[in-house]
Amino acid sequence: MNDAWHEFRREVFGDPYLVWHEGADVDALVNEHAREPERAERMLRAGLGEGDHVAVESLGALARAGRAPSDTAAVLRSALPSAEGTLRVRIAQVLHEMTGDDEHVSEVVAVLEGGGHWGDRIHAALALAALPSTPRSVAALHRGVLDPEYLVRYHCGNGLLGLTGARADIAKHRGFTRLSGDDPVRHRAVADELRSASSVRTAGVYGDRGGFAVELGAADHSAPHLRSARVHAAGVRLSGPDRVHVPALRNLDVVDRDALERLGFVDVPESFALDQSTTDELIAALDFDFDVARWGVTDLLIGDRVRFAVEIGPVDPLGPRLRTCTVWLDNAVVTPFDNTAYVPAFVHSLRADIAGRSAEFGRWGPTTEDLSARREPDGTVRYRLRSRIDGVGDREGVVRLRANEVVEVLRETVAVLTAGQ
Image (cartoon, rainbow, N blue to C red):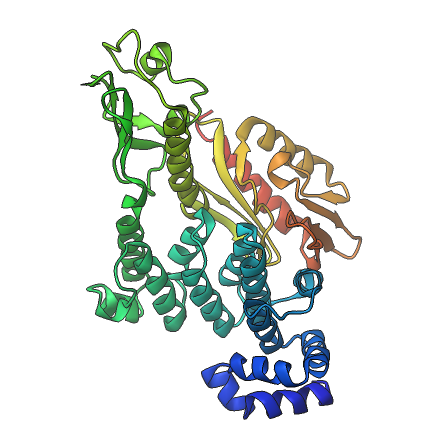
C-alpha cells in the first residue's frame, strides 16, 4: 500500500484492524477534508489507485456532503472495469448514489454471483439490500441463499426478507434453523419461500374495473410463463382463463376486444374505457416478475460456471421457441443484458461453432452480442465484455479452456434445446 496513503488512512480512520472489523468512520474524513481539502483529495486518489474501498467510501461521503471533487464520478467510472470484490461493490454503490442509474446495481450483483472471497459476497449482499431492487438483484439474492457460506446465506436471506415488507431479521424467521444448517435442500426451501413471499409486490388491480382493469395474482417465479389474471371491462368480469400466458399479455400493443378474445376471454364488450397508463403499469409489473424468473429459474446447468457453462431455464409450454440461456465464462455472466435466446437461431450458431471450431468464440447471436472473444493456439480464450454503462469501459480477461470441454458444453446445450423436436 502507498506509504503516504497508509499513514493518512491510519491518521484519519485509526487501527486498520478496527476499520476492517467495524468499518471506516467516513465522517472523520469529511472533517479532515474541511481542514485540508487538497491533501485529503490527493490522498483519496492515492487510496483509489491502491484499490482500497475505504477511499471509495470516503468519496461517497464527500459527495453526500456536496464537497466531492468535480471529477469524482468520472474517476470512479474509469476504475470500475478493473475493480473486483468489495472495491467493485463500493464503486458501484457510490456511482448509483451519484447518478441514480440502476445499471450500477448489476455490478454489485456480479460480485454476489461470482466465486470470489465470501467476505466480498457478504458486502455485495448487504449492498443489494440497500439498493433499489431489480429483477437480477432479487434473483441474485435468491441464489445467494443457496451459497455454501453461512454468513452469505444469512445476509441474502435478510435481503429477500426485506422485500416482503417485513423487518429484515432472518434470525427471527421460522426458516432460520434450516438456513443455518448444512443441508442444501433445506436452503433451497427457505430461498423459494422467501422469494415467494416477495412475489406479492406486484399483485393487485391495475386500472378501473368500471372501464378496464386487470387483477393480477402473486407471481409464480418457478413457473413464470403463466399468471393468475382476472380481466374486467365495462364493469364486468370477463369469462375466460384464470391463468394467462404472460408473454402474450405483456406483448399486447393495443388492448381491444379482438386482443382480449385472442387471449381466450369471451363475452367481451364492444367498447370499454382504457387509460394507457394502466397498460404501461401492468406491463411494468409483468416485466419485473417475469425477469426475476428469467434471471433466477434454472432447469439445468451445463458445464462449470468458473470456466464455461450454460444455464438453461424451463420451457414455455405455449412459446418454446424462446428460452432462457445464461452463459458463464471465467466465473462471470457474459449475457448480462439479454439471456433470452431464440432457440432455432441459437442452436444453429452453436452447431456451426461445434463444426467449424473457428478462432472466434461466443458469436451466438443477440444473446451474446456483448461478448467478444477469441481462441488462441495455446487453448486460452481472450475475451472482452462490453459495458452498457455510460463512461464505464469494457471488461477484459483470459481463461484457459480445453477444446473438447467447449464442444461438450455446446453439444449438450444443443441436445437439451432440441429435445423432442
